[in-house]
Each structure stands twice: as structure tokens, then as C-alpha cells.
Length: 85
Image 1 (cartoon, one colour):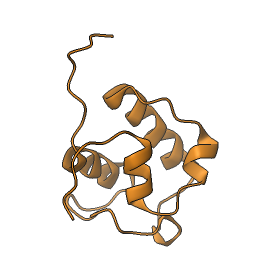
Image 2 (cartoon, helix red, strand yellow):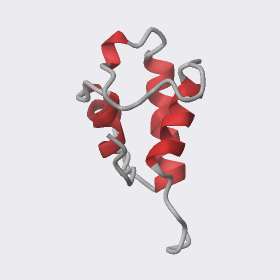
Image 3 (cartoon, helix red, strand yellow):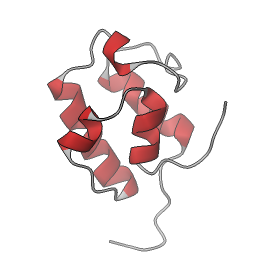
Image 4 (spheres, one colour):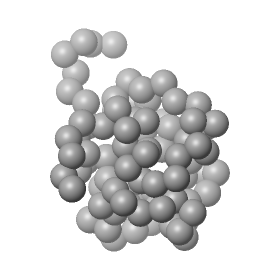
């Protein structure tokens, strides 16, 4: 892995999560509760892990994701930079 690779920004990650969850681009802001997201399921959980690993070189286990309660928790877990709240 190249060390100079840029990590995905908060905005980019949220847009990817919108797509994973079948939401309109720009829907997620970070304060949403995962259990209130209609399409949050095991498939989106695994897709999110793959996204974090490929985009930010983060090593995340499904148990860690299950321990998250908000989108912001996922962002921190994925090592996403930037805060826009």
C-alpha cells in the first residue's frame, strides 16, 4: 500500500454511505441513528467495512460496527477525517 495515499474525506464517505443505503446523495449528515436507517442491514454493514478498508486502510471487524449506534460512530471507526458539524 502506498503511504502517500489520501484517505477519504467525511463528505466523500457520507456520499458513499448514501449510495450503499440507497439514499439520495447528501442525505446523511452523521448524527443519524443506525437503527433508524431503513436499509441498514448485514449487507450494508459488510459493504461499509470493505469501503473503510479500501478507502482508508482501516481494519474493522463486524463486531466493532455492530457496537456503533450512529453514523458518526461509523465515521470515527473508519478513520474518516474532517468534522462538518
